[in-house]
Image (cartoon, rainbow, N blue to C red; front, top):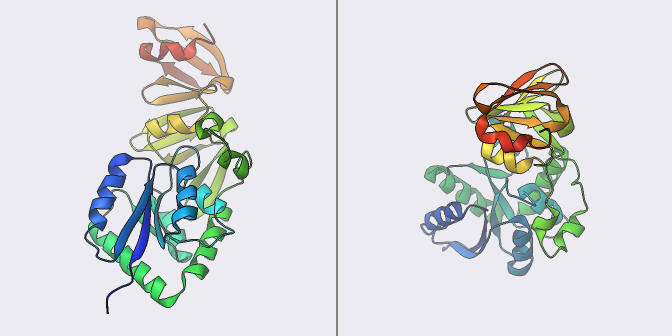
Length: 271
């Protein structure tokens, strides 16, 4: 018997990621791509318009992220959700426990095949509603409510005009999640693909790139002062010029961080 056609929506803010996933899904005869979306707001509109059976949903996107999309649709009939994520192994274990699915970027071809097989089984067994209910509960447990009402964001003409920056980070370690208030972060430095978030009493490790971290923090407060350092300007107590156009910043807790000459413009509020 031929498998039921699975009407599928792809959501990712990276055009190359969308193109790559689209090409890979061409190898599945029962997958029909009904559209793509480049951000959360567009994804919500297309889910409501197209009513797909399946959505491949990126988690980290500017504006509304993948979790916000699911929360916005929580009171409606949800399609099956497959997350594309770079979350650490503990979050992945949580997704497994709650019977939702995920794909780690870059997406492995065999893993994609397993995910599609699981979707077919869910459709055949009519268990998607129960799984989506668990997914919504999980997302609500991981995330605090957005800083402004979701309805306000969705009705805005331009989502970028109401861009919301992070108010806290969820730090996952040994199966536990610690919420770190962004305002308590004094400075951040990069260690490969990980960020070290320094507060007054502890250093938290977050898997993230410096480029993405720049986008997630309010640029009026958090300034890049070195290719591997971001500082909370509210925590700066003293600024001292050094050789070669560099500056030494002393923070309120006594820590010292170096600002390179190439990022001198970030210090204009102090000069």
